[in-house]
Structures are given as structure tokens and as C-alpha cells.
Amino acid sequence: MAKVIDIIGKVLSGEWGTDDETGDGIPVLRTTNFTNEGVVNYNDVVTRMITKKNIEEKYLRKGDILIEKSGGSVKFPVGRVIYFDGEDNTYLFNNFTGLLRVKDREIWYPRYVFYSLFANYKRGGTRAFENKTTGLHNLKIDDYVSRYEVAEIGLTEQVLICDKLDKLYEIIKLREQELQLLDDLIKARFVEMFGDPVSNPYGYDKIALSDLADIKIGPFGSLLHKEDYIDGGHPLLNPSHIVDGKVSPDDKLTISDEKYEELSAYQLKTGDVVMGRRGEMGRCAVVPEDGFLCGTGSMLIRTKGEVTADYIQKIISFPSFKKTIEDMAVGQTMPNLNVPIVSGFQIIKPPMEVQDRYYAFAEQVNKSKVKVQKALDETRKLFDSLMQQYFG
Image (cartoon, rainbow, N blue to C red; front, side, top):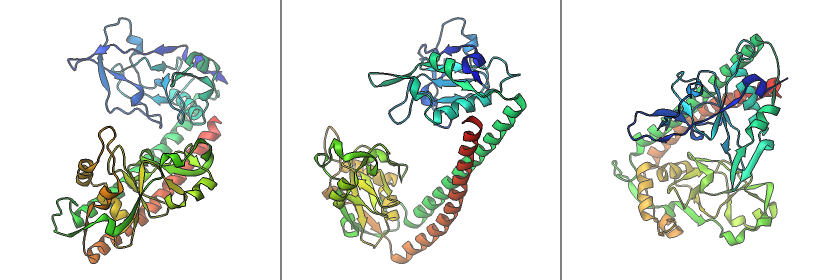
């Protein structure tokens, strides 16, 4: 085993500089350019005016590893790493990050060192090196790199391991792209058959949402107390748990079986629509399974059967419809939706034969999605298994 500090020599601190008013500054990577997958997100890269001298060694080169020194949260520890594969001597990095650069590439393959650090972060290995001050999570980076060890193996074997993991990662991304394309195909078919639900180009009848579904607001906050929250309980769905039209629960925000039964009127069932009533208007998702509880900031929409939950979700989340909802919200400090407002949503109601054609098409595409999702899950499982095998 070899300590990271012996592999890299030292951690280089980042630069920040001053505001760039000309657009001719130096691109600087920040923690906002980090992803949880270890790759660089080149969207929204800022440029800065940096006049400090003797910073040539800080310009990023292919194979450099950036580590997050400040950031993180209760759910995600500080210490994420990304592998730089961009253009040499073009980018700098800010002072909330640090640079780890392999000294001897004839002994250490940078990608292998990155994967070792990435695997350690994924299993929570950086938590022991966090220093929390006023809510900010800081990484005791000198302590971390002087204590964390990378398994010593031959360079050829390092390269082979990384090639295997890289190929699996590429397959994962391709599978994810396939799923996105299939989702886009269903959305395109929806627009083709139903048009814009606000302008209603096909002249379909409109009906109040309350005639198509039962609507209920989530329980008042006073009904939930600190002692009601337990690990491994029933997830509570607030607006922040609805992401890209899907349910994304927080495993830390779960309630006991007893409280779940007590609040049975707010239990979400498979096929319900859960919609945020605060923040981003129109954020909603179809509930994939039983066991969730509608949160205080959300609403439960249960279809009566004349249209599907998927149909209601797509109508409400349609861009023009979301804009209409924003105009309906009440409240100055925190605009929100209430039951009377949502009940009055005007929903287009195409003839059943039109709906049936759409559902038949969506069903066939969803069958393809199931196959792709299964292949994606298996590839992710293999990737995680190999990471465990190689890096513990």
C-alpha cells in the first residue's frame, strides 16, 4: 500500500482571482463543476482575472485529479473527486478544491489513483476527515492524503483495471441515453396527439381536474413531530423529492409505521400523482409503489379512472401549463397552491379512442424501457462489484 501523499508529493491549492468583466479571463473549475460520477461538468465554467505569478504548475493537465475541500452536506460528505481529461494548460481551479497530480506515471496510472479515491468516497471514507464549521463541511485534506492508502500493483494491471471500469461506465451512459431517448419519444408522441394543453390546438373539451381526480393537501406540519422520524421508515414526499418527473425520496426523512398508519388519509398509493404546491410550480410525479406519505408541501392527486395518472402528470408538467400554474399561485412571501386552485385546473379531455392510441404506443415503448433499465441495473451492479473487488 502507498499513501496518496507519497504518490502526488503535495496538494496544490486553487486560485480564485477577481471578477472577469471582459470575457477574456482564465476558465476556473469550481465544486459546481464536480459530479457525483467523478467526471467534470463543463457547463457554467466561470472565467476569472488572475494576475498572480508563478502559477504555471497549477494549470490542469490530462490525468490530474481534483478533490473537493469545502462543500458536501449531511447526505453527501465532502471530498468528491473528479478526473480531468480536458485541454492541457487551459483551466485553473478555485480555492475550494485541491489538485492531486501523480509524480511518476511510470509507476502510477493517474486513472487508477482516481478510481481508488473515488471508490473510497463512495463508501463514505472521507467522513472521518470532515471538519464542520457553521454548517460548512471542510475536508482535512492534509490529514486525508497522508493517511489514505492506494493498493500497489503493476502499471500494466492498473491500466487493465481502469480499461474495464471505463468500458462499463461507457455502457452505463449509453443505457441512460437510451432511456432518455425513449422518454423523449413518449413525450413527442404526447405532443403529436394532444398538442399544447393550454392553447389546445385540436379543440378538445376541457374539464376541471376535480372532475377527473380526488385532490388532497399534505398533512399540516403540526401532525409530525421529531419522535415520528426513524431510520428505515416510510419516506415522506415533499417538493424537493420530486425530480425530473420522478420520485426521489430522502432516506433520512422517513416516519414510523405507527405514524404512517395514523396519517392513513395521506398515504400515497401506486399510480397516484404527487405534486409540489410550493417552490417550482407544476413539479409532479407518478407514485411508483405503495409506502410513501404525502408531505406537508405536497398534494395528493388520485385519478377517478377517466384518464391515467401518467396523463395528468404530463399535462401538469407541460411547460405552458406550468407557466399558467405559476400565475395562479397565492401568497407573497412563499407562493403556493391550495386545493380550490388545483381543483379548478382546466384539463383537456380527448376522446377515449385518442387516449387509447397514445396509451398503446406508450405501453410498447415502456416495455423497451423495462428491458433497457434491467440491462442498466445489471451493468451498474457489475461496475460496483468490480470497484469493490479492486478497491475494497
